[in-house]
Image (cartoon, rainbow, N blue to C red; front, side, top):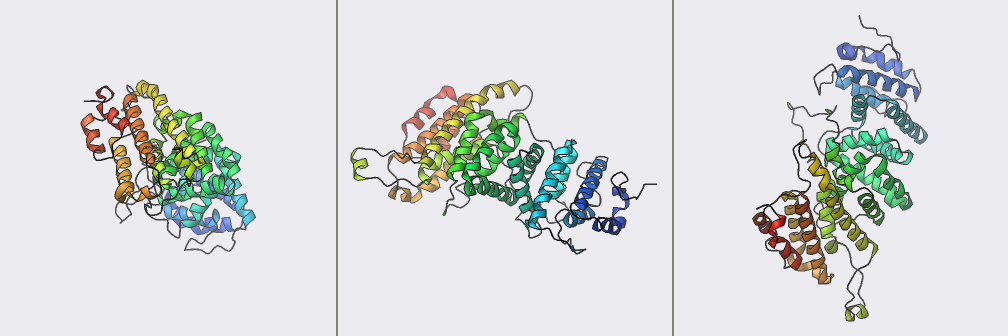
Length: 432
C-alpha cells in the first residue's frame, strides 16, 4: 500500500488516486508559508515526473490536479476550484525566480528537469490566452534572470521550449521581452547576451531563429518593425565569434521530450504553430532586404555631386557585417556537413523554399516602386548583390541544393543585376 504521508520522502501515489487526495495536498501546502510551499511542491513534481517515465511517452496522469497545484502554489493564482488567499509581492516574485533557478540548477535528471519546466511554462498552440499570460510573463522574467546570472540549466530548458513551441505567440513574446530587457532598456547589458554563445549555444541558436521571426518584414508589411542597433550588434557578434552557432540545432539536436501541454486530438485544438527554422533563412532575408527597408540618411547636394551615395549609418554597417558573417558561417559549416553526411540524412540549411521566400518578399517591396522616392538607385544593386552572394556560397558549400533551371524560374523577373546573372550562368556551382 502506498504511503500518503505528506513530506519530501513519502510522496503520494501520483498516478493512482491523486484526484481523490487533492484536498489533502492543498491543505498541507496551505499550512506552509511561501517559499516553503513552492519548494515542497517542486519536490513532489520531481517525483511525479520520475514516475511518469513508467507510462507511454506523452502520458501524464491526473494532469488537471497537477495544473491546479502549479497555479496555486507556484504562481499563487486562483485555479478555478480554489481561491488563493496569498498573492505574491514584487519581492516574493523575485524570490520565486531564485527558487526556480536553484531548483533547475540542482536537478540533474535531464528529462525530469525539462518536464517540470514545460509544465510550468509551456503553452497550447494559438494566441496567448488570459489564463496563460501570467505564465508567459513569469517565463520572460525567469529567462532574463537566467541570462543575468548565467544559469545554464534554465537556458537549456528554454531552448527546448522554443524548439517545441515553434513560431508561436508565446515564443515571440519571450523574445520581445528579452530584446527589451537587454537591448532597449539597458543597451549596455547586451554584452551578457553576447557571452551566451559560449555558455548556452543551443539557446542562442533558437533565439536567433525567434528573433528572425519577430522582425520578419512579412509579419507587418505596412509597418515594418526594425531591430534595435544593440540587437544587431549581438547578432553580428554571435555570427563572427561562433559561426557554427547557425547549425548548433543540427549538430546537437534538442531532446525529443513530449510536452505536458500536448494537444488532445479528440478536441478542437488550434493548429500547431510553424516550426522555427534554423537561423540562416530569417537572417539571410533580413540582410538581403535591409537596404530597401532601413531609412537612409538625407543626402546633401555635395554628396550627390560627388556621387557619395553610400549610407554609413550604424544599422547599415551592422547589416553589412552580419551579411559577411552569414557568408563566413556558410563556409565554416561546409566541413561539418560533409563529415556528418554518412551518419544522418542531410537536411538543407537553406532550402529552395527559403530562397523563394526572400524573392517573394523582395518583389512585394518593389511593387509600385514606392521605395525609389527615398532610396538611391544603387540600393537595389546592393540588395541583389547580397542575394547573389548568398545563393552562390550556399550552392558551393552544399547548404543549398537546386538546379539552374529551378533557380532561374525563382529569380525570373527581378531587375537586372550583373552578379546575379553570373551566378545563374555558372553551371559548375549547381546541380544539373
